Image (cartoon, rainbow, N blue to C red):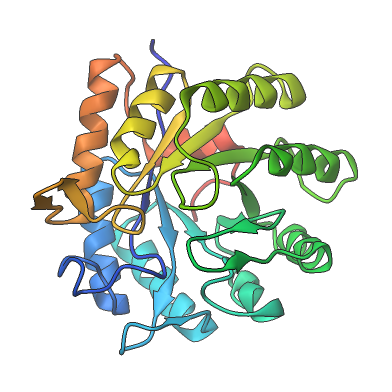
Length: 278
């Protein structure tokens, strides 16, 4: 298979702390340094959250602005994707960074259970976030924690609430949400192709030990892959990942196994229909 594979690195997230793995980048400076290494290892997309100095979560637009500036300087051309996830803020503050015009932003289009809480994505907030993404020319990555989220993305696309072909990411392995189930995964792929066309790009993310398994499934099936310390802090049960780049390099090895070239940032922009880098 010669189809290039886009590797997304989710560098920080809202959950892992230095106590879980000292390599988790917290400050903007650490995030830029960690992302640069991952970019050089093969990642074309940086999925980014920001944190406070005490490692708590935030949606502070000023921190996002500094991160965007640093990534544009040190990772030229890399696709910058900001998180609008619910662990980092409440209500419309979740989209307060969208006027910064990142290339992409995550968009969860429905609610589901998380390990200890309900991940709430009420329809009015989803509609507002989608409208802000249209306003600022930010391509959403649809985070699908459930089959209904893929179908909701289709409804939104048909209603003109999403621009272009939706880019859907299957998230599997979150406790109390969709487990890493191969038959379900295959049906997700089939559903994306049925709803959006055989050439529609899609991605998959696995949480914890499921990360490398979902990398393998996605890459072997012609999709794109997400890795990084947000989702998984280990290389195996006994070994902490020394960096985001180490997880990217592991994903590159899977690409090599299936004869999938790793997409450059420029190729990834073309595949996803994004504007060229500034």
